[in-house]
Length: 514
Image (cartoon, rainbow, N blue to C red):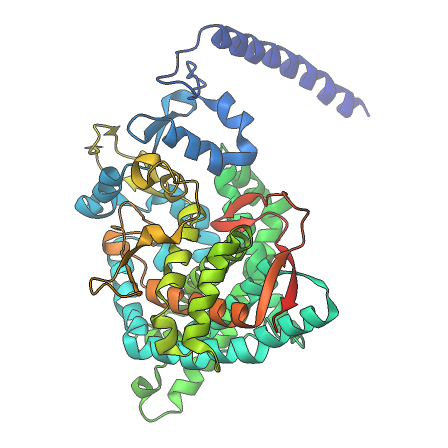
């Protein structure tokens, strides 16, 4: 008891004067801030920078930083962190090209990013730089050739759509029950990427889900969520201290990652055994895991890192894009009608095949327009390895983090015109030169629309993602109508756990079409 009293007394002795000093300093600097460079931009205080604005907007960071970019004359904003630290947010296409292509070597993932995600991604392709990244990208690129893409759509995606997704939606329509479309699409994408990455069927969308596989998928979701929340901490010391003492969310993260890696390890060892029993392992390299093992990468932890990175990319990006797409279609029934007309023209009496979905131009444009508003990865950050000056004159010092902001860029009037708030797929199309009724797709340069990154790191799976999404859209809209279950006028809340999501899921009712 005496020890407790002594500790309590010391705490009061130290804590209250410290609080008084901090409050006094805060009050002083509140009275003498530097004025903002433009209206609607946060004030910058000595020592504290714009911390108070950050704290006030901590629950809407994506939208807040997008506002900073949109309200800046050059679409670039230098955010002042405490103690003189700086971070750049930009939506300027010239700057994006500078970062992602022209001066690619000067901007890497950086230690802050890699350290924050190393527990879950290790040294996989999305968490590495230099030679390690080059090797992984070179081996991975073989998975995305035309032959592999056709096989992916005609076998993996078709089976998942016809044998799991459609029956599940038909059952929901018959029972008139409310389902979480975001969760359904995540499960669908998870199964697909596991087949591509591991050559293994996770059966996560299957109603009769084997428990060990469900545990793996749920642990993966937990690991991604907690790891991404680390970025939302203003001071990284917060999660580092919890990690050191193995408490709270960091304890849950450690358990989840252990489950993910242990399950992945079993799959890797099973694949090694499978390849060793074949006369020519190279000929059996039909999935990403087989390809890496056959190319001589024997380090088990490294191979697991690679596969986990691809599961993250394949699961979260397409499911996020489709979730927001179905919501936007409901809000824009005229667009939905046009998409469905195209689908029925291409696949009136049969399910859409590889060649059918390739030719769905208006559907493709509508997906691009949806991702303009809700990019699967709303922002991406690099770290400068040397001093530099961006195209708009923004000075970047070595070690500074530079974030390009696709979410903000999709809302810039200077890029999309005064009608940017309208969901209008026609902005991606032009009439055919022969004067016919067919549309021709007009792509935007990757630096004005960096939804799939750009430059040397441009997304390898871009074409695969579009084929998968169009296949899902074609079959779902051909058979069903997706109706949000929320009250009319209620808007879903945009959040980001490495990729964009709807907070609380996307509850819908499924209506069967005649």
